[in-house]
Length: 256
Image (cartoon, rainbow, N blue to C red; front, side, top):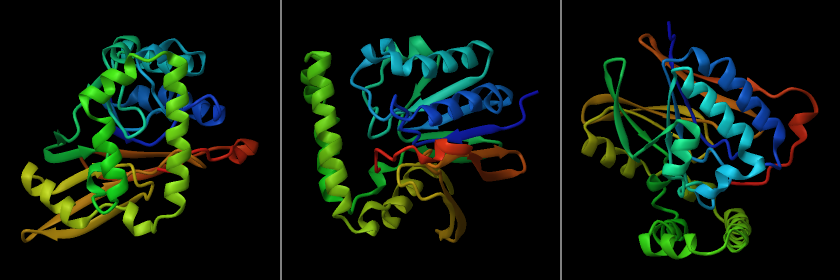
């Protein structure tokens, strides 16, 4: 019988980080195989230049692992992140996963819970919010997807370099969520519990919202280890998944 619901985010999987990919496949085969459901709240991949990427060799193990899990009966829901927002029906068909809207309100063991990637809460990072508005525009995406794979790959790598340089120059608090934005969306969605990723700052935040206790759980990234939130009828717990040996020396290629 399924023992829990699992939540992960910010894996940033790519061919340059094979140890993390291996840890994820092991996670799918062991932990996720016994779960009621698995929710991946954005940035499963380091980049996604369109659903033609399902045929790329570096993503084969991930797609195959997800397909094996979903074929065995575990529901897997995937939310777009700021790196892989071009995942579409081709990804769903290849992996057996279902794409999830952002935000998404679910019933988690009797408690209404809001799921988000988290980037839309970082409203103090004006530069990023402008970039997000640009690349989420339907006309921009249509133009991008009409380019060749090589052209798209070049553009994405240029974006990543710009992002690294920009992130290094920003104050940490600017790249974190804005508490007023958190409270506004929780009121709008009529919830007192939220789960999100994006900021790479795993922690449970407890605060008061309209006279009631509210909880916001931030998921960890998958750089030096894995990170998973396990939730069941008794509550939730954020756990680390250790990455053994020399694999810990893999270079961190991306910042959120």
